[in-house]
Structures are given as C-alpha cells and as structure tokens.
Length: 142
Image (cartoon, rainbow, N blue to C red; front, side, top):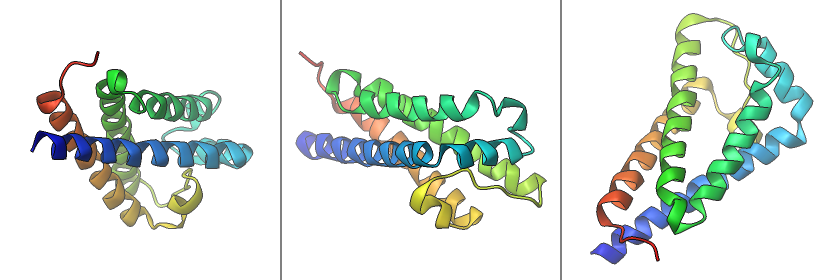
C-alpha cells in the first residue's frame, strides 16, 4: 500500500512539473502579451512591473523542487500555495469585475474563467492530497 501511495505522490508531482513548465514556457514565449495582460488586470496592474517575472520564476523553482525526493515536500507546499493564490485570484476577479483579462498561457487560455476556476480547485485538491500522502508515508531521503 505504501508503494501505491508513493506512486500517487510521484504522479501528482509529475503533473505539476509538466503544468508549471508548460505554463512558464508559454508565458516566456509570449512574454510581452503576458505583461500586458497583467497590467490590464484591475487587481494586479500595480504590480505589473515585477509580477510577470516573479510568477515565471516561481513556477520554474517549484517545478525544480518537485523533481527531487529531498525537496518534494517544499515543492508540493509551493504548488499548493501557488495554486491556492491563482484560484483565489480567479474567484475574486470573477466576483468583482466585468472585464476579465486572461494572463494564462497555452491551452489554459482556451478555457472559460469558470472552467479555469474548476481546474484550479482540482489542482489545489491534488496538491493537498499529495502533500498529506508524502508527509504521512514518505521515509526520510538518504
């Protein structure tokens, strides 16, 4: 049973590695547009100078942390917090504004805002499950 739970945590980690690498690369490839979309957000425009860089760097750091068993817990905590922040932002922007600029990249920008919210809630739950399983069932790394 422990092996199955370890594999589940690894699978979820790989999912987030792919998600964050894909999202950050998509943002890098269309960086100017990403900056513009952040600056058009009524909630984020004050931070448009550094936030695009910070998001990309955070996504890549978290993806890197998830690659190694020794740093997986930190990476999973980062995944959970980042997805929670993204989810909160989407929920807040859906409830407060009519104009909804999309600053996501790639396939995710094809989703409606409600679909994106549901996807993010699923990601938060996945990160929470993996974090609990990894803390409860992992043995110390050597």
